[in-house]
Length: 175
Image (cartoon, rainbow, N blue to C red; front, side):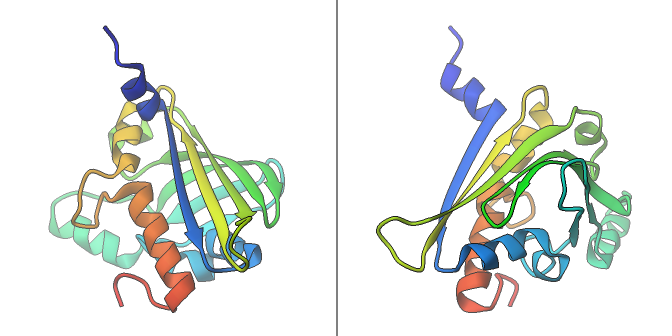
């Protein structure tokens, strides 16, 4: 018997976090490289915020140094994709592909959706929902699910936790 819950978890992952911040601040933290380079893996992500616009994230020098010290390479562009839908500061839909690893780079583009909503019962708090559709991309699904508690490989839960921490305290996990 196939466990459909496990299969769904691998093909569609949904993460939610409540953040004490305005939709505009959350939007900027996701889409502005000055912000998105300050949390999680600290790789600047660049968006052309229009339908059909490009998305890419670039490797930091620290990533390149770590890779070189461990005998492997990291491309300059570590993520890429295309903007499918943009409704600032509430919704962003894009394709997404991880290029850091040859296995994930060979998989098809996945679809990533960010939705920002005001929390109905908590003024000044927003709910950020990230839905990652990963059909046909099992290596990417495993990676973004975050199975490593050490930080590297912490996946979406780790990234969103660091985003929340940065927006609410002004410091990321590395501070």
